[in-house]
Image (cartoon, rainbow, N blue to C red):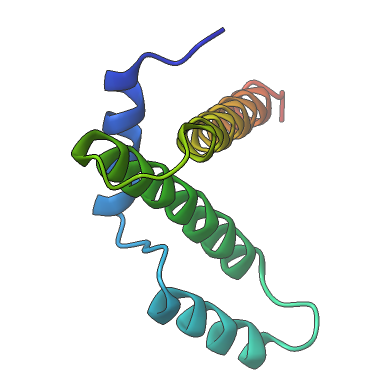
Length: 112
């Protein structure tokens, strides 16, 4: 099941609005948060780190595509690999989101 490009850009925008960035500052902030939580880190820190990596992957694919379109991209294989990597990352994020929502709905439906 392929994700349409408009859905990918919408997901990218939604993650960006959350304030999660795929750059060094975000990684440093995440590591600082995990350092205060102990060796195991926190669940929120882990989620923040995974979201940062996903955004970084999408940024790399976007930059490779722009370089290829402008004629500065050297190898088309690198562009295809970057876009495929971003697509897999997005599909994984959507699958995890769907599973989390399903788990929440199962909890809500539990009898007390």
